[in-house]
Amino acid sequence: MAPDDIKPHAGGTEPDYRFTLANERTFLAWLRTALGLLAGGVAVHQLVPSPAAASAVLAGLCVVLAAVLAATAYPRWRRVQVAMRAGEPLPPSRLILVLTGGLLALTVAAAVLLVLS
Image 1 (cartoon, rainbow, N blue to C red):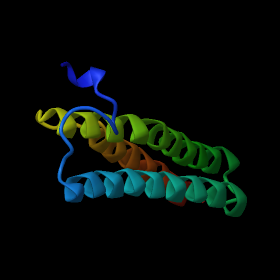
Image 2: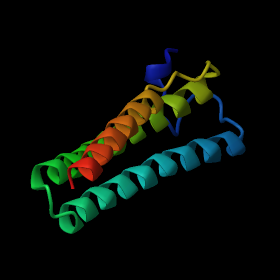
Image 3: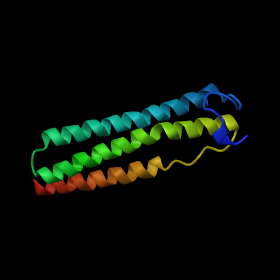
Image 4: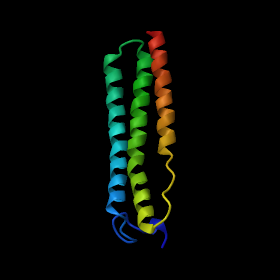
């Protein structure tokens, strides 16, 4: 049976509940991070008036990164759950690289905003 054939809550072998709960906590952590980035983007857009272009770029980066994290959190949770049920190695996560690159871009944009204001 291929891992993709297994539903996240049916089939395969029931993994230790601690692993299932750890996977769920990781999923919720990605969502909290996305929510924090979204709130940061809204705050930058509302509270940083000048220069408008730089603050818009910073706010946009926050919102885009939040959307990427929110959109990829569930598929990542599901892939891990399916792998655990199938007794296979956990799939690698590109989310960490995306988050690191996104935060680096946010840091550079914030530095530019500080220099320009």
